Image (cartoon, rainbow, N blue to C red; front, top):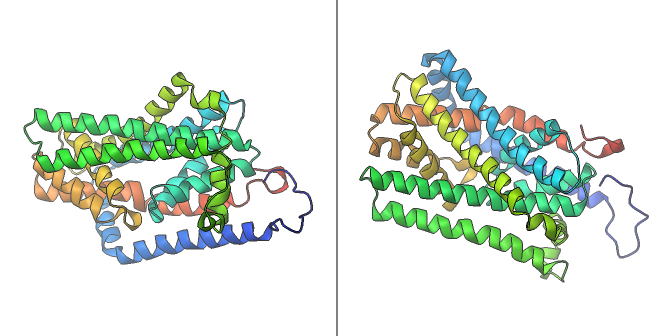
Length: 339
């Protein structure tokens, strides 16, 4: 927390468990990332080989597009905090976005781990609890709203190309239910407020604090339709930038294709990861992405290579800066600083 806490009453928890939780959570995140990298060391070698044969200019373009994804996430939080009258530099939010997305990749829990981290660090940086909760809820709604629209767009392209199947339609339909259910759950938790929670929730201190904070989100921010539209667009741009990265990867390998092909493959692969989260999203994403590229006419070897190159940019390359950003977040709020 940014402010000093009063002396603990007998029934209050001392601050040390919170610090212990942060160390424990960081250890789990680091361990998951190391184990994932170790188990897929062959993918890392393949990625290095692909980098050597790819065109450097296109690789720089792919790296720039990935940087934009973190900037869009940070910008979404920035506009929410500004609308509530809270201020935090975009550079700080960019670092938080890098750490959050890294956490979500390393420990896939439908975004819960990254969201707990985000709220906790915003509060530590002096952001009011209600505004931190609004940033969480609105960014979650915006993400799934944008994702759902892009998913419908991908299905429309597949139908237009004559590639739509009942399996793909059912998968996207199931995702749309999830995309509605998760924001609805967040809003329900907010309306529930600070009512007594089940005992099993109360035993998990970080989850308990996050749920308590969610109940403090200001109604005026949650009902701000123009603000929600901005956040939805910014979150949709994250996925569009990922699709553009895949498109650029095809060019980098000398097998150019149209953007719609990369867009559909990226969205379907991301849906597969959302519906079946596995550590670092490994396996589900590669299979779905390469399979969709192949279905849309990309050669087998090119589809595999482009998918592995994309995963290198979205997962492997951000691992090191993500680790450093996650470690640096522990210092936020100490001695009044957020660096």
